[in-house]
Length: 327
Image (cartoon, rainbow, N blue to C red; front, side):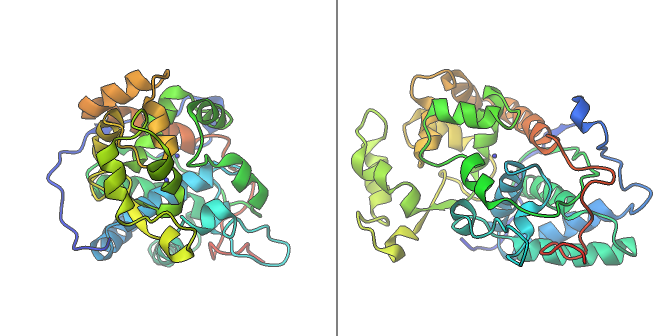
């Protein structure tokens, strides 16, 4: 599972894939889970996401990241939405979240709109995040897929697991493969989901070492010079907070992320690690020239990630306020 401007509709045709989870652990989830209890739920979420991206297009990448960071810690249970409170181990202040995750207010607004649409508390916060991520990808020109629904919200977070489970931007390929394997994801999932970095920005502090200390064997010199213009070699906090796009078209969900890797223009070490002579080179090369293959595999991997060991049935709860557990 890593710019403000006016929103323009992307003239890219969407590739629609109907995917269903077949693993035993996802048997209780269903894309039709709310059909009877709140038939307008999905339309309400889509409308809210589209409106938010009209105001701030880069929020699409933030909502996708919010889902990824949720799923990699415990499960896709909305645990990263919980604010710090007595007896709550909030994940929000853990370093991987504090410096890169936002969109909590968008989820809050969707929660309120859904309660009006559904006539009460029906849709879980975890499902809101899952659907908002899908709708964000679609709005930015990417593929769509059926989101399996019926997740429940966790009763607590786990800040320790944030540091342990979330992949670091400094990981090498061996570490990335092991990290994703711990989440039930394979090498193809690793490469496809990393393609989510085709949208969004990241901070100078996460790529500073790469652009100043690596050689032409791993980074294109011209690309390094370009990124140095807004990322000086200093420990100054203001400089480290400067942002750069993760690929050359950060507001459009496309294959440029992979094309950049082939040219040694990956911004993060963990990005370029996918194309440095290792077992993932072939997938990167394929996705760089085959949008249909990337879109299909990305959609499949999003479903797979979203269905890994969910809370269902009587587990957890459906939070009235996504930021706190119910009294």
